Length: 245
Image 1 (cartoon, helix red, strand yellow):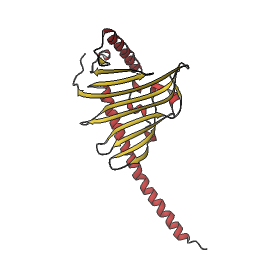
Image 2 (spheres, rainbow, N blue to C red):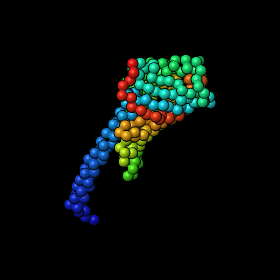
Image 3 (tube, one colour):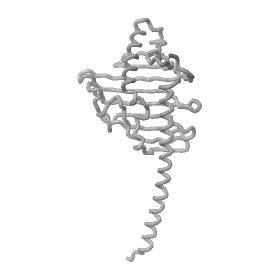
Image 4 (tube, rainbow, N blue to C red):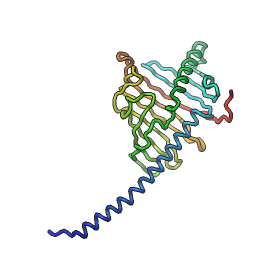
């Protein structure tokens, strides 16, 4: 059998040309997706740490014990005066509960100040690892290599992420991160399973966090089992022009 070398060469050239034509188009789309992601998460960061007040409803369960709280955030230049506890398990908090709440918040704020560079949502995603998983005319899902700065270096490479983009409104509507292996965080905490979901909403031209769900299972100090689930909803966002002293 004789091969038509000219024909084969011509077909290879055509296929190569088509591949080269498609590749820039895919890169351009991915560039657009990255821009939407960066813009969305930066906007969401600003609503959580900037000039917006909001209310949260939190259901926290630790080893079967559940507490339900309603809390308020109001911007204040004194960071220790930004949070207030409105309700705990449907009741008005007593003095002891308020004192414990404020002490816990102060510890949380102090830790946040020390690691302020790690608080950004952008720290959760390796933007250069994005890969399209599924798409239609309304949404597109992209996987990525995830990271959670508070867990430290041992968690690197052990967290997978998934993003959902709303193509009509041009924002990140959902972000999920989930562990794919066990890792140790803060020396004494061994995490067997961990998952967090962040649901966003578009409020006029600003992206706001609507809901955060977390599930974790592991051991503390080697011998004590711990299982945590948390569901936090955010609402009543209001822009505050000037934070009080």
